[in-house]
Picture (tube, helix red, strand yellow):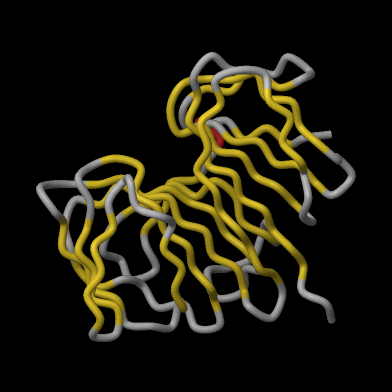
Length: 190
């Protein structure tokens, strides 16, 4: 059975480096620390540029949900990331410094411990009833904009999320216009 994660139940917390705040959607294992999690999904409101927190052994994916974007220096390589750009993947141990482009942003961040999990992230728009395959050991759907319903009539609004485990083979999403982030998590073979 899917686990609903309404925005009101997500945890607001300081960044690892203390430079800002993030809304943690879900972390696994649930009671793990920022140094010991296997995977983590969060949304951050960024009001000023600066260094990213370092997460050795972690693979990260980053997407811009709101705002004009950020200019990144990733270990000396310049990269601009805007809401229209593909999701950016990078090593969490890499030194990254950001400069905001024209004001604050909201970003979507997925992190997986390389030795335990890997992940994919897709940004999708649903405009009618759609069946999403639930391939992966776990699948998280986050509503960026709009609202949608699941087959069991659960209604999700912007900021809400739902988590599916490997037992579910597909998920029926019904929406007239919803932007979603689809995160698939895969356990690494031992």
